[in-house]
Image 1: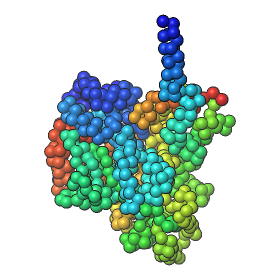
Image 2 (image 1 turned 90 degrees about the vertical axis):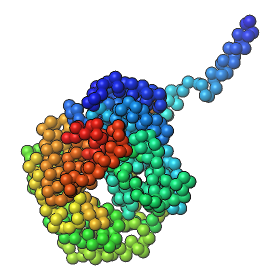
Image 3 (image 1 turned 135 degrees about the vertical axis):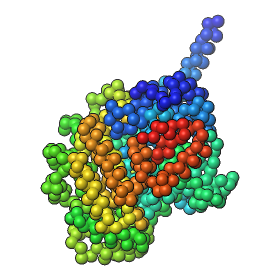
Image 4 (image 1 turned 45 degrees about the vertical axis):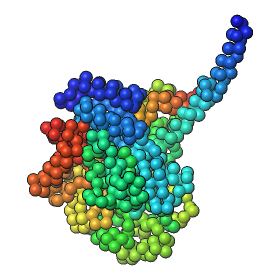
Length: 519
Length: 113
């Protein structure tokens, strides 16, 4: 991929910037060849698309190098796009929102700075991945557990800053952030929360400092580069208990969600329950053409055959409980009693006790197994996630699900859908799978995505996270008081980053100099 | 003069024989490559993981699905796949895997057996 600078820049500007950066990090950590640029593209983007084209990358090893790079970027007025490990697959990976942005790759900043076993927290650099931290805790025999997302290839901090989730009681990963260190666009360094006091004894244990709380201002934003973050870790429980359910009919979701809503609200269940349709399971281990080679979305008759052959329900989910054995057994009885009398297959139960292999517990261990869903259509594959937020309400969920399914049918795509339950809201997670070398399929995938954004906004459902290509469109749906939030974000952006060098376009927030690039 | 030369040659030989400066042996290089393969590739290419699953689906039954058991891999091919991806396998940047690390891995996978 050749270098295509953004409007107002020349290739010479960038070459001078790369030379400056090499003076900071060493030339071996500046990546500016055509092949380098290819390696920072969105993995699931078709090869012939030129959106989100990186200008190259630079990989610092320390906070001081990050600060120096930011200062140089201001002098040269070149844009930087920070990534922790660049593994945000399905949302754009390491690629920038605005073509011609240089990726600031923090992979090399991968130190586990501190782990406090007594109080259950750690302090990490952004390049620390889930596998790395998991292995460290295991090898050091530290009885603290991670909250691990389905795709564990990425950064612990990066995932939390993009509001990813895991499946333990600490599963709202962004809520486990406690105290950040941030390099601002100017190169200045700030610590949030109690860390704003030098020598603080409470930086990673108290979420709030004094005055406005800033941790979330650096989540899904372009206001600073997070160079350290505190994360809370769950103490190893005495036991776990998993209850696995199958719901035979599509309409069963209505009553099941009502039951789960109450159990979730009362914290009988304190983990993110993910209820997925059968497509979620069949795409993990098979390919589409093993079941159906006709036109259009999978017919329901084929769906029935899939469920029969794989022995799965229309909906499938697991309720996982963590804690003292007496407590979780009591909570499990409450859950089972709630479902008693319903026409569903027997609930499968799995127990784990401390001392047994962790692989047998309800905790995830890091894996990237989930990624093979992208091979559903064959070819090089691709996926994007469309995930609006709804109240936990059975009837409302069913209406939204059916409306979405009809849209998938219109676009001839198979509806991979489900709901992930937080305490009061749920995310309606829909995966759009495609083959990125099939131009028609890819075009339909993007057409579906935009349509779903529009439909969800009309129904009052905003997305919690989105792909680079849709950040402007999703930001546009947050339109209260004539897009007041947009104005607030841009006011702050112009103040904190007057030269517009940091992640232009992230979450639809554009600095003044590039505002016309907004789609 | 000759004595000085012999002394110098002897010192040079001793110096070059020291562990710090001895060239890495072929076995050491392959061991290093194996270690890097485990750290960077194992998450997909060990038994039961997604890369092995996908290779089993794609390759004929005569070829092992476990990458480390393949005997037909050439270094240049491995390096191309690492930097450009293959099918559903994403590529690796030079921040994730330096060229030297990539070459160590390709040497391990292409090792003579």
